[in-house]
Image (cartoon, rainbow, N blue to C red):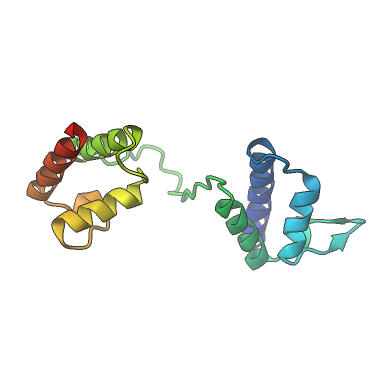
Length: 152
């Protein structure tokens, strides 16, 4: 548990650095006010993240995520570094590429993976938790629909 709290404190520091670079007007005072809003208390003359528990640190991180911090959640897979990521099928790669092109062309407002999954769910009339769950025929139909949309 102590390791997780230490990790969350490090993430708060990373998020603070991101905010100072990317949010105009963000400074140490605003960061301390954010910490205080989530329950931080004054220690040795200043408000510090070390006074927060795990839940409060999570709330601070969520606050930074809402402000646009691109938090990447990675999971430790153990010491085996020889495991290779699963190969992506050419159809899935084409789906993602076409979706990205639609976003760049301004034909869709949200070019995220979640939006692509929602589009696929509407096209197939069933829940699509990930692109691997689509059949080859469904993928091909969606590819053709995206090509037609991009051509318009």
